[in-house]
Image (cartoon, rainbow over all chains, first blue to last red; front, top):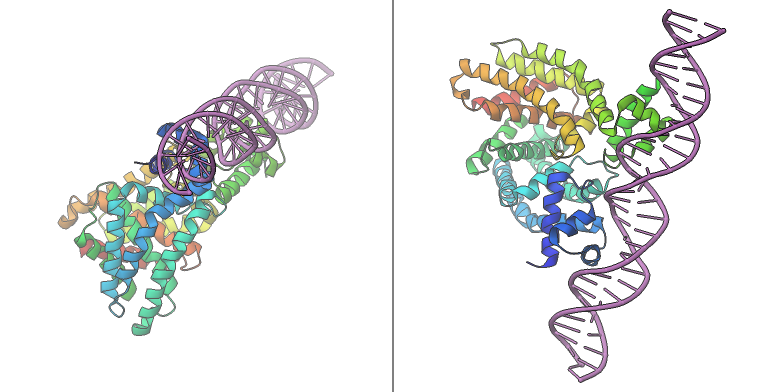
Length: 188
Length: 188
DNA sequence: TTTTCAATATACCGAATGGTATATTATAGA
DNA sequence: TCTATAATATACCATTCGGTATATTGAAAA
């Protein structure tokens, strides 16, 4: 593993266990066994390291997420596939996803808040488009697309958090239940 | 308003807007217009200020929450009342609840993590007792009480977060829908 | 072999951090 | 009025923070 990869790995581990703000740059380079200028050579700043870390994991996720959302016209199937895509992503990078969940509510003015916002926006736009399209078929959804977008993501992440305590497994059956529970909220 | 109250107020505002770790003690006392030893006179440490802040808001909440959970035997009614209790609490202290939500996923080793854990445990025990009791009446719930406890809190907090973006209002109808959506997840 | 550039280390910077020893002021009770 | 105590300020502490100027090493290209 390259020095760059080790820095990313140790940064994630420290950010997750002690928080971004509580993790000094010194602690990260100590964990890898290099000196500070090495880190600054690769990432430019602590914030650059943060951005790189998020991009490294999320970049390969956009494709599968878009694919899952593509089956236009069949909302229940779309929601189930999207739920599955999130479950797969979280299952394969459980530590990363745990840390990612922890920085979602970070203040807008903080480093973590600024770094995570574009990622949240991208997810939001992709899913909101789905609910806006669906509103053309289901009249009673009209005007509620923003609310549904938000709640849908919330239920997915609640379920994933639950899985981290071994309370549920992130398999197909669980995805069916999760998206079904959300659908019930829509059409009731 | 006393100096002590002003310190608590400004601390909440700064913690919420910039995060606990990004808020120096100096910034808080500057916002109030006093000097550092004054803050240390009242709270002993930055961590003491954090604990006091959480206790100040949560202490008056335990009574109503317990009351809402007391109607043993009628699970749907209990869940609706509990949801309403949370909605009321969040509605009356929206800024505080927003900050509280942001520190829930804080690392266990961090100050915020250590401070918020007892509060989470208390909520968890109170609700878990409800689901354990309910399992005696509804056999198909047995063994799932931990999962239900977690998911129920997750859906409540997702809805409250949604309310912060003006996507939904925290009224009785909303509480009925929220608890109903969760009930559907249980008995399906 | 020489040149070039990426990768790493040594040693340092000013600023901010949480916290405190000590002195002063204001207030309330005897 | 005197005393005790709560409340506040001045001035300081060692440590850590993110970041960098500069030098050295190593490897690949010319």
